[in-house]
Length: 371
Image (tube, rainbow, N blue to C red; front, side, top):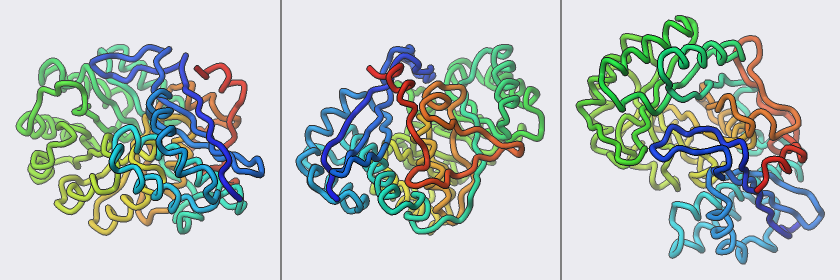
C-alpha cells in the first residue's frame, strides 16, 4: 500500500486567544489539519500547530520524498523526510509540516493494522490519563469565573498561563495565584505558565526564582516557561534552586534540540508538542530519553482534538506519564471530531481504543472552520 496524496485544511473562524503580545483573533489560522491518503482510499489524519501557508510550503518541499512511499512505515518515512531536507529545514516550519504528516501516518498505520496507535508505539501502559484544562490568565474576577467553569466541565487539574501574569508586578502576580487557588479549592491541581517564549520576554533567573518561591506557597505543581526557551544555562540554575518543578520545551523541534535539556537536567518536566517537534515519532523518542534521565514528560498541547488524541496515545505508550494538556474551551477541541473527548467523573480522559488515533473528523465542522 502506497501514499497517493496529501490534503491540507487550515482552521480559522474559531481560533482562541493565545495570550501573546500580538494577540490572535478568531479568523487567524494557527492550526492545519493534515490528511495523508493511501492508494486504497484510506486516510490518516494529523495536525500541525502552524498556519496552512507555512505547512503548504513545507509540503511542497517534502512531497517528492513522500508520494509513492509505503503507507505503513511512519517512523521510517518521517525520518526520510527529515534527512532529505536538512539544507532547507532542520527544524522550524518544515519540521512542523513533518509533524502533521507523521501523526497522519501513524493514524493511517493504525487503520491498516486495525490497532490503536498507542499499541503500535510499543504497548499501552495505561488506558486513561488526567487532562489539565489549559486557560489564560485574566483580571481577578473574570479569572475566578473562568476557573469555576473549568471545574464545572470536570477538570481536576488546571494550568494558567501568559499575560497578565509576569507583565505588571509581583503583588499582582500573587493576587492572580491567590485568586486561582481560592476559586478551584485545594482538591484541584494548579500549574502556572509564565509564557517566557512571548516576544521580548523581560525576566531572567532572579525573577523566576522569586516567583517560584511565591508559587510554592500555593501548592503549584510546576512552573512552566519561566525563562526564554533557549536559556539553557538559566534553566539549569533555576531547576537547581526552585522549590517547585520547572518545565519547558514547547517551541523546540527535533529530538536533538531536547538533548541538552535532558542530559544536563535543566528541567524536571520536558514538554514537546507532537504537532511541532516532529510528530509522534519524535515525541515518543523524546519521552523515552526523558524517562532514561528520570525526567517527566508532559506533552504540550495548545491544540486541536487531533493533537489531543495523539497525546493520549503518546502518553499511553510511555512508562511514566501523568498528564495531557487540554485547551478549554475551544471549538477546535470540542467540535472538530464526531465524539469529543471529555473528562470522566474522576477527571480522567480515556485513551481512544479504535484503529489509529481512534477519532473521526466531523466533516461539517471542517467545512465551517476551513479556510
